[in-house]
Amino acid sequence: MIDEIQSQLVGLSNLEDALFLQRFFKTGPGQYGEGDLFRGIRVPQLRRIAKANRAVPLEQAERLLHSAYHEDRLLALLIVVGKCAGADEADRVSIYELYLRSTRFINNWDLVDSSAEHVVGAYLGDKSREPLYRLARSRSIWERRIAIMSTFHFIKRGEFDETFKISEILLTDNEDLIHKAVGWMLREVGKRDMRKEEVFLKAHYKQMPRTMLRYAIEKFPEGKRQRYLKGSVKQGA
Image 1 (cartoon, rainbow, N blue to C red):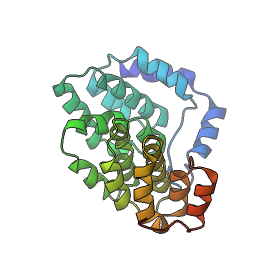
Image 2: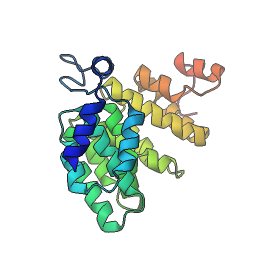
Image 3: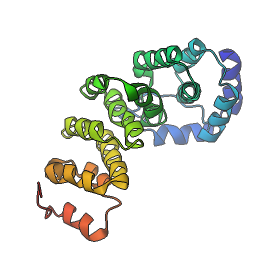
């Protein structure tokens, strides 16, 4: 079954788009996506294929996730996310365990962002959140991004504590992609409860990397946004 899907992907490949995507996803020497391979297939096409192949057995999806090609891995994750809807507890456990043992293949921001909240966040919704803290302290940039992006599931339920606690762990992270993800999640909190976001920001904004802060305050009224950028908001107020 996976061989048939990969043959379909080969047929959809586009060299010009592949070259563009290799640049877009920073696959050059020393960049975060170094060495990744692309077929040149756009996301809407992959979503259609995923929808048509939702019945693919989980072990086959895992095999696809091990592909050298970025689009194959994204397709595998889209299939897995599709399986989460309506899954029973045994299947949820299997999906979650597959995901965490496969993080070395979930190795770019789009792969994380399209899946972490739906797989990890949703699974941990009624369980201990401790696995997120282990991921947040990982040496892997992608596991750290999984940790903060998984909290999007909780944010959408009006639960913000994990986002704040993991953001605090990642305040001193060296990676720009972590700064962006943390700022994004803080902004999502603010869309739902700006007061709570500001409590966190007032305690930490002067220690935040600039990119993290800019993402976090992007939707603030301009005057308030400028006060944060200029460091004139009183901390702890």
